[in-house]
Amino acid sequence: MLEFLHLRKLSTIHMKAFPGKILMLAESPFPQDSRVRNEAITLTRMGYKVYVIATRWENQPFNEEIDKVTVYRVSQIDLFKKNPGRVHPLVRSIYYLNSAIGYIFEYFYFSTCCLLLSFYVELRHGFQVLHTHNPPNMLFIVGLVFKLFGKKYVFDHHDLSPELFLSRYNKVGGLIYNILLQEEKICLRLADRVIATNESYKMIEMERGHIKSDKIFVVRNGPDLQNLLILPANEALKSMGKKILVYLGIMGPQDGVDYLLKSLSCLVNQYHRTDFYTIIIGTGDVLEDLKIMSSELGLEKFVRFTGFIPKIDLMRYLSSADICLDPNPSSPLNDHSTWIKVMEYMAYGKPTVSFDLKETRYTAQEAAVYVAPNKIEDYAQAIMQLMDDPDKRSRMGAFGQKRIREQLAWQHVSKNLLLLYQSLFTNHQFPPAHPHQHLKSKIPFWSF
Image 1 (cartoon, helix red, strand yellow):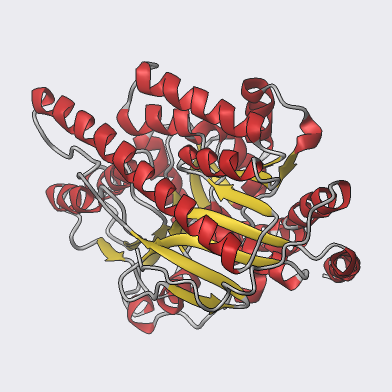
Image 2: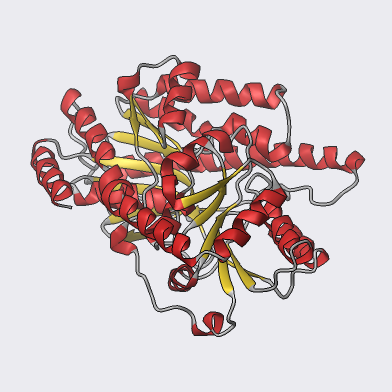
C-alpha cells in the first residue's frame, strides 16, 4: 500500500504538469462494470478528468457525476435473442443469422451514438484521449474520426472477439471470424496505446496486430480492496448444515455453467451427496435455459439462481461460501482469458474448483484445485474432496487472500494504467483541452 501511495504522489506531480482529459467508451453499464469503474475512478484520483459514455440501465439518468467521473448513457437495444436455446438443428441456423444481424445492428447503433455523444463531450468539455473498451471493436470508427482531430487513441482489449465468436457458437473459422480478426487488427494498429488483461492477450496482440511490446500495457482485473467487505455469514444458509457452494458471473454459452450443473447432478446421483447447497449469482443470455436444465437434472433442492442482486447481497453470499466454483471450460476464448470472479473468490479467502486453464492457474496458483479441462465427473470429484477437507480449504483460502492482498489487488495492478497515461501525456504535446465556453451551458442535447 505504501508503494501505491508513493506512485500516487508521483502521478499527482505529473498531473500538475500534464492535466489531461479522457473520454472512455464502454458498451456496459457504469458504475456496474467493475473494470471500467476502477480505471475511470483511479485516473480521476490521479488528477485526470474522465468522461464515460456507457449503456443505460433502467432508472439510470442520462447524465450524472459519480466519484468525480462524468457519465453519459446510451439506451440499450436488443434486436434479437442471442442464444438459440433448445431448438431443432435446422432452426438453429436461423438463430445464428438473427444473432449476427442483431449484433451488427446493436454495435452500429451504439458506435453511432458514441460518435455523436463524443462530439458533444468535445464541444462541452474538451478531451485529449479517447479510450475505448471492447467489445465492440467497431468503436475504432470513433477513434479514427478523433485521431483526425489530433486526439490520441487507447484500445482497452477486454475480450478476444474472434475467439469469443468461436466459443459462443461452437464454430471453426468462417466469414464472421475473419471479419472480426480484421476489425481487431485495425483497433490494434490504430491505437497509440493498447491495454491487455494478461500476458496471453499481449502475445496475441503482438502477433496479430504486428505491434511492438512497448505499446502494450498489461492491466489485470484485480479486485479493489477498498470496495470489498467481508460480512458475517448468512444465517439462513449456515443453518442448513450443508457446505455452501457459490458461482458468480455472467452466464453465456461459453461460461460453462452447464458443466457446473452436470457436475452437481453427478454429485447427487452418482456419489449420493446431498450435503451441499449451491448459490448461482448473475444473469446472462442462457440463464433461463440453465434454470430449465437444473430442473430437469433434479437439482431444485440443491441450487438457487439469484439473478442480478445488490452488491451487499453478493458480498454476503461470498462471505458465506465454503467453496467457490469456476467452471469455464477449455475453449478458444477461455484458454487465454483471466476471470475477475476467481480473484474475487480469492479476496474473500475462498478455495476454488476450476478447470485447468493457463491464465486461471497463473492467477490462483495454490488457491484452486485444478481439473482436467471439460471433465464433468472429475469436476464433481474435486468438489466432493474439497467438501471433505476443511484444513485444505482453509490453507487454500489463506493463500489466495494473501496473493490478492500482496500482488493482484487493483491497488497493485493499476500501476500500469497510470504508467500508460504518464507515458502518453509526457511524450506527446496536446493542444489545451478547453471546453467551448460559449456553448458549455447552452448546447441542447437529446437523451438516447
